[in-house]
Image 1 (cartoon, each protein chain N blue to C red):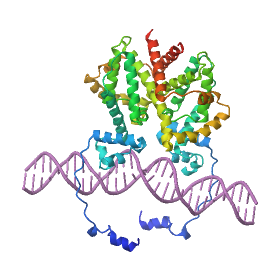
Image 2 (image 1 turned 180 degrees about the vertical axis):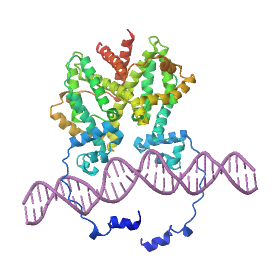
Image 3 (image 1 turned 60 degrees about the vertical axis):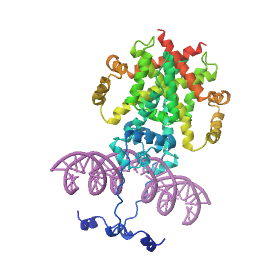
Image 4 (image 1 turned 30 degrees about the vertical axis):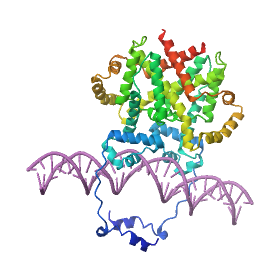
Length: 246
Length: 246
DNA sequence: GATCGCAGCGATACGGTGTATCGATGAAAT
DNA sequence: ATTTCATCGATACACCGTATCGCTGCGATC
């Protein structure tokens, strides 16, 4: 296309006289923190946390990125809201019931469920103090359920227990997530990735410097992630029980 | 300064004739992965992980950002190398000795020490499978030390134990780090931050919806982070001991 | 000792990010 | 009907990771 043709198609926009006026602004779609957070969560669920940008979230809501700053002061705040929304989901799953073991198990499994529904959760959970209303409500419910059980009269003990179990759960979920992440980041399927990784592993193990790791790779029948999580959780709960007997 | 003056100072660079030739390139400083990683770690230690950018790391080494791509393929790889370097530090602290409790304690405390020396470690630890040589050496040493103890004849049990303890440690360290992060991100000192946060907390607690949390804030004498970590660790080790008795 | 080839370097560029600024706008208030 | 004003979005800025590619200086070759 020549310059000449271009001029015919698109009149030179430098001159006001020939430029059309902007179209009337359509009434902007109503917005709310909730809608913003929901859009962000959908984006994170389907495209990964990395592609949650204010521009994309805003686009999904049919607005410019700057409009979001009426509702949040910072992207970090949006992430905070996303996490708290997930705590909301966990609350909605119902109250805690049964023994203290039941309560702790329920907590652990709900968190695991949430982390599986929202693969980005663990990454956000790390390094974010829980001050949102849903997180507080959830913690309060857990404290209340535990506190009513024999052996948990001292609220300091209850808190310590809760923190320890939570630490395990978060750590275990991060571990579960790490492999998934590496695979997903490489853009391969799990099999492709294992196939691509296997030769390196074999080469390293062939050096003989890692006999125990080699045994694990060769001999150990790996339990499912769910089973592994469960076994760890049993260890923790045994520990809590042991502590209570003093 | 007028245009005229400017012209006198800086000759129009559009004309080749008046433009000076580029100065001879200085011999580039020798580079290596190790130097790159060290520079990145220093930057992360002093300015925070967020300000580790390839541009800044390269600048610190007196080179352009693109030169780094001869040594790494991706920023992610640099982060992997940083983590593995920290495992190197942990290895250098010496072998594992004593009972299986001693070994697990040592592991936990070394990791905690590393996380305190390098505040960014926990963030990187999350979601990064450990395939680096130092990480593998460290794991191998831990497996060997544990495996020689009574009760750990089954390597699957050893592995499960290691994973569980590690999960707790990582989770606990993340929890420790989260508050520090929030404070540091706000750019306040700890006292300023507590002062700024306190009114909100009081207002929320005044609603009466969080009686247990209120009790914790008001009644519980908070142990130091070190003590809290230790208590949790004791719970975990008790759990391991309990599991072994079957 | 001169020449050449080539690995490796860095200038430049691209598409993306979070967010500050500020004129324009449309709805609410008068 | 007019004015006010909160709010929206276009634009801009600094910075990011990284693809591209011409240039440079060094080591190998003749």
